[in-house]
Amino acid sequence: MSETPDSAVRTYTEQHSAAFLDDLAEWLRIPSVSAQPEHAGDVRRSAEWLSAKLRETGFPVAEIWETPGAPAVFAEWPSEDPGAPTVLVYGHHDVQPAAREDGWATDPFEPVIRDGRMYGRGAADDKGQVFFHTLGVRAHLAATGRTTPAVTLKLLIEGEEESGSPNFRALAEKHADRLAADAVIVSDTGMWDEDTPTVCTGMRGLAECEIQLYGPAQDIHSGSFGGAVPNPATEIARLVAALHDEDGKVAIPGFYDGVTDLTDTERALFAELPFDEATWFRTAKSQAASGEAGYSTLERVWARPTAEVNGIGGGYQGAGSKTIIPSSALVKISFRLVDGQDPDDVQQAVRAWVESRIPAGIRHTIAFQPATRPCLTPLDHPALQAVARAMGRAFGKKILFTREGGSGPAADLRDVLGAPVLFLGISVPSDGWHAPDEKVELDLLLKGVETTAHLWGELATP
Image 1 (tube, helix red, strand yellow):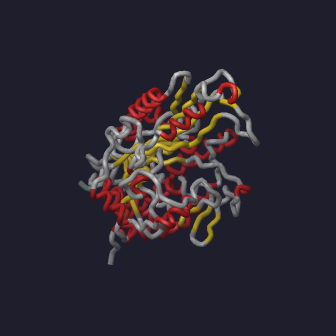
Image 2 (cartoon, one colour; image 1 turned 180 degrees about the horizontal axis):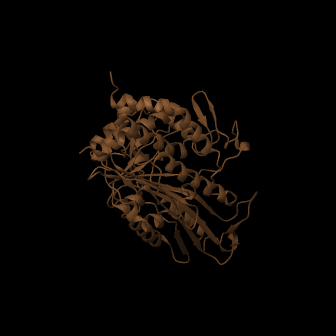
Image 3 (tube, one colour; image 1 turned 135 degrees about the horizontal axis):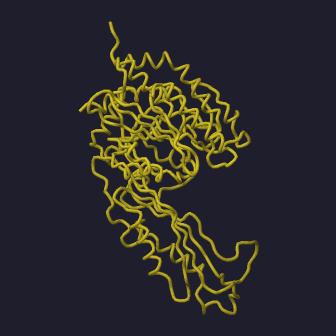
């Protein structure tokens, strides 16, 4: 009896898994740390390695795209089917710094397999999740008898994600015509846990600012002048105290303008996840929940905007006392943004709020870092449902839905290309992204291969 397409994908994946893992280990040996200048040559070597491997896989186009920083890799495999949709896969080939003395059990750039896991920097974030697309497309062709994918498949694998993607938006804009796609797949994400396959539907955006307040031209004696001149440290404290109301909402006028509220369906789907708050507290090293009233913990970190004080300071910080009125004080604040919020509008609202609260005798400056826009794909979007079906075929389980509280360059691709962004990842929280002994679960990695093998046909189906 001939195999079904699903079993054919699984058979092909199993038969080629050893060579696939050998190749992945070879790539992981390249210490492509974009944040460390001494590894600039390694980041380039990583790009060259991937470009060559994609050509070996069968991609007729595989190019290195230069940026003012580290190089990216672009690849394309056109479908022979008339009217086939175009899909762009995003990932990154650079990795976080790592050294044995950080607490690794083995050399972070000499990958090892122990107990069904591959350990090495980049195993999960993000080389492993990029590389499963190579075996996945081959399994797709083998199981379907095709000579080209069911979609026109493009890959854009950047080299600076771990350094904040400083040149990514400009790269995407420069090559927008080459990158044009009907959907974007971000393979730089994860699942809920080893037993709960999930699809992420969105990520929050990010705006960061530093507010400096200045009073006297120098530190002055608090006995001679205290109570008679404004104190920048006191005013910073007042500013921070006014940031939230008694219900935990951000008290900046206009901050919530445009926010897309959670639907009842989304709240119900979040509630289906096996979330244990006590365990979550232990992971967070916290003793209690806090935040905006009326929302669960998951809703707060995934679907609500926030304002967090990241650092505050001013005046004397040494041992003992120094009775002064400090000449300056500062606070660093980050704002996580959700769908419907525009970072430019948020920045304007923050500026206006700060200016309205500065008393006479205090001058201020406020500086914002480059912002990241939020990104959300509706649950009923056909492309999102195609991802869920493909993952369901691979895992043989019901697929649940999550969001992520962090930020990334996904929204740049959505904005530049005008295409929906979908997230496909198989990493789990225990993989230890950015930490010592980063690893990937091999059985989940191969499920990623199977998922992507099914996905191209699912996306090509009307």
